Length: 140
Image (tube, rainbow, N blue to C red; front, side, top):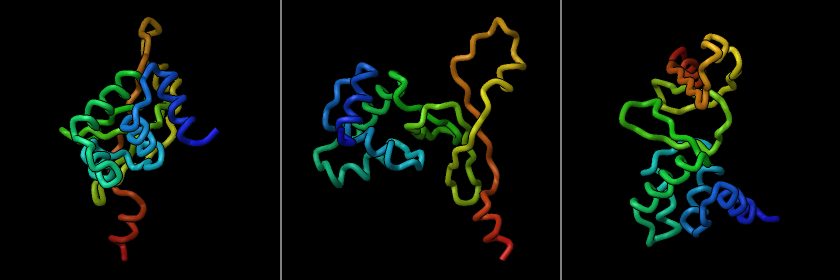
């Protein structure tokens, strides 16, 4: 089975009809693990699909979030970013270069501080600071 068929299958499993735009947006998110904004997705895909509209990208990303195919990050105020990795993990944003890094988060220790009557459905862990690259760059 080729990559496009796997992408279509992922969409269909979530009850999403696999149109060309939806497949391309999902493919972009899977290939570019940079946590792009809707604008970044639009700018990059519009080179390949000249008829693409920003509205189509926003609507597609909104549908993906609603269906649990991707997660929306709000690590920055008023900026939504998107991540095709929906597993429980954290995000670290460098305050110097702006890059966002994924890191593993153990789900259980976070939940253990809650009363057992709470049912946790989503966990978001955001750290901000200086990445090793920028830290080393400032030392030289």
